[in-house]
Length: 163
Image (cartoon, rainbow, N blue to C red):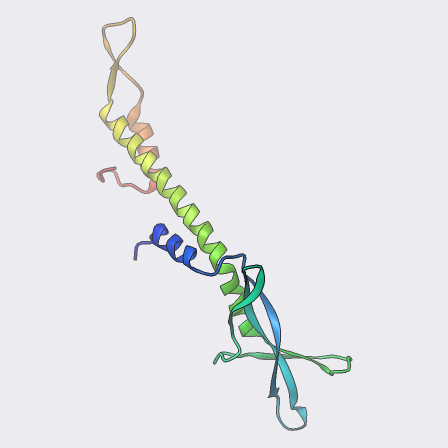
């Protein structure tokens, strides 16, 4: 698979505008068994903003991977319970748009750098000699082979591959 920043940016432009956040929401339902059965737990949701109003983008209430963790406490409710896997999943989803945009930026920067280095390699390989000003003799311009090897190594280009 080739990563296509343009396609990813198009998909990012189509989603609910960010920034996205995640937060807990109270849910009804039981957890535990027997005398240790408790009511209510926190699940998590991803939130965004549409026309100045906070909206739920997605949640994990009906997830099949719920992992309820319970913390005993001395408060009037006797502790708390939350879907820890849901929290982790929603944290990931909430950060995905910003992470993908940053990945696109980095990939485009690296591709641009690689293209520039390939162009430099090509130009150095083509310009083996130059006429020195004030002297009609042809002199080596630089030890281009050393520079070419370094540039090729920097981008993982083998000695026989075309830049």
